[in-house]
Image (cartoon, rainbow over the protein chains, first blue to last red):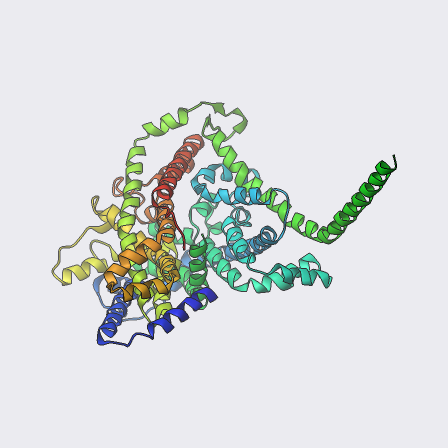
Length: 293
Length: 317
């Protein structure tokens, strides 16, 4: 975070050495043009979808106008009443929040232990845990399903929660971050008589806020979006999460696109709200991970 | 005699000191031991249950004919699952589609994301805003994006063809045409994934020391030369990361084809992960499915190692 700010600062100061020649200004204008175009391409489909969800079917398939001529909420009321979207929303929210909170906490604690403790076989264990990231999910798909079924968690929300309680990616990210916390600070707290739990919760966690914010957003979005594993575990409609119910609209409503749009909106809006507030953490977190990996 | 005694005496003092020091260290480290143990122990149990044991089981499953109702009676069949896989009518089609997918994704994403990242790194105002906007498709649900583009690409009433029609341009069948379906679906996937790689590459470019560009400027290098001679070579580590992530991601594609086209029309977009899924949970052949997954793992491992071997820069700065 500070690193990128420093770079920005350095770049700004060194580029201010150059006089803003007309050629440079033209160059900047072209850059803005390209980036505006790219931003336009990135968000226009969603803008179209927002308005499409308020249109009647006839209008949606006939007119190319972006704004609806007649605004309607019928799509939303029908989809909420006919398809069990509220239940799916609850399932998704419960699953994603539980997994996010638990795995953020376990990642932070493990990252702390691996960064600041010394014990026999530490590096070997770390490599072993990290190596599981290399295995494609398809390899464990069937054996993991058998495990879940043996534990009577097939077709249960707990079946997709229990597999997400730890996150190897989170462990990697948090260890990277915890290494930067000065050990002297921890020792000072120890001499003052603080227990390790207290050190972890009141000293280490607050210092790791920015990394934790990035990690929680990552994990939340991944779980909100997760498709294959819930598809395998959850069969009965009332147990399903949002992406599954949304995908089901394809066969339920055939080509009634206004229904698709309304359903997609209900799935996307919570994520977009989080993104509006957390995009900074998300992008910084990703940039940080990319540089350190 | 006396010297020996003195030596012994010195030794025992030293031993006592060591012991005291050790126990002192233990007194200090005891709380850390308990904290560490209470974190590591559940971790080991979880990883054993949900990661290591399933991986080991996968190796076993691939070699047996799995009986779902009575797993204990599963028969060891050696490499039979692999032979059955090769005889599967969709095996080679799905491998071909998956490789084409990965190749097309490289062609779509790599140059464009590098270009956009260079623009972002050089633009002086509004970088964060542009980045946040370009990143939007990455955070939006895969299934929603799948449905969204199916609507836009409907051959009759979709927005894309309506616009083409209005401009008197030739229309496309998009996802409905057997030739156009695969490139179209990869384009949608690339559109969704682009922002992710843009952010990583932008961070990589901004990480390159500014002095190098200043030096090049003094030497009279133009923008083109600075990009090819400084940015691209010094971006080596980031580019390697991007290509490895891209390969790993595209070789495991599932949700897009599953939701958008069900592998169709015909088998035009039937990818390898769909084969694994249908073997496992539609035909209930757990052994063959796991064998297929292990093959996929071998391929991904091979390609990643190849990329690291070929692309890894031999320097750092």
